[in-house]
Structures are given as structure tokens and as C-alpha cells.
Length: 203
Figure (cartoon, rainbow, N blue to C red):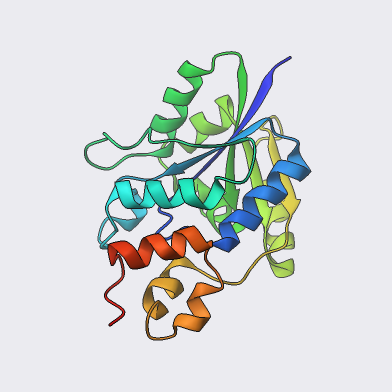
């Protein structure tokens, strides 16, 4: 039986409860065997943003998903120097899992801009897409955008529930509005951030 592996990348700075809800729903809806969470090292779309060092973000991912089965936290991008593109990471994973079917997971915002991705046609020819609509108003846009791609490509669209929070909001409000931010973080991730003073000192 062919193993089905989902790939979900991001900066995860920090990883939060919205990510956990997102991933657990995809596991359930799409019946994937495994989802690989891949912290990005040098994402091309965030090259001018000050990002927390990789090892901290990688460790936070481990803490956030340690109680959820069928999740793998991958450090595949740890040693990549310079900008990295999704096709490079996907090709490495495929070589390591030749008998598996690979699904690239993304939100509707990413899909609507997918044609700007490096070698996006190669991604569609070799891999599968799972596009997650988080807002009702995005559903029509996503289905219309799907029509612009060759019908031979495997693009699956699903609707999921969301927690309306972003990593940037958590970083910005981490100590200035601590009661607001802490409810969106796994308790071990919260303690890790405080202990390592990732977003400033509390006192």
C-alpha cells in the first residue's frame, strides 16, 4: 500500500494552537499516514524579516506536537545555505520516500499566489496539492483559481476551521498583552519562549 505523506512548511515563529488545529484537521479529513512539519531555514518570501534561529523554532515544533500521533518534525532545511525553494525540499523528501505519495499542504492565500512560485509546474506534475480554505469568502476564489490549472493536476480543496491568530501577532503582543498571547500557545512552547527570552524579557 502506498504511504501518503503530507508536507507542511513554515517559519513557525512561533508555532501556535492555530497550526495544531490546522494540522489535526488535515490528518483527519485527508486520511494521511503522516504529516511532516518542516520549519523553514531561509524562506524566499521572508528574506528581509528577522527570524528566530532555526534550532529554537524546530524545538518549539517538537514541543507543540509531541502529544499528536503521525506527526514528524523534520530538520531537512537546517543545513541549507541561502534561499531555499519548496521544489528542492520536496525532491529530497521524494528521494527518501520513493514508494510514497507526497502532498504539499498550503492555505488558500498561498494557492492564490502559487503561480509565482519557483518551478510551480514541476511541483504540480510530480506532487499533489492540498489547499485549505480557512475563510468562507475564500472558497469561491480558490475553486475559480483551480480552473486555471490543467485538470490532470491533483489539487484537493478542503474546508477547515481556524483559530484567528498569527505568529506575528503573538510576537508583537507576547509581553505587552501576555494574557492574550498565552492562550494561543501550547504550555510547553510558552515556557520555552519565556525561558529562552525569544521575544524579549518579561521583567
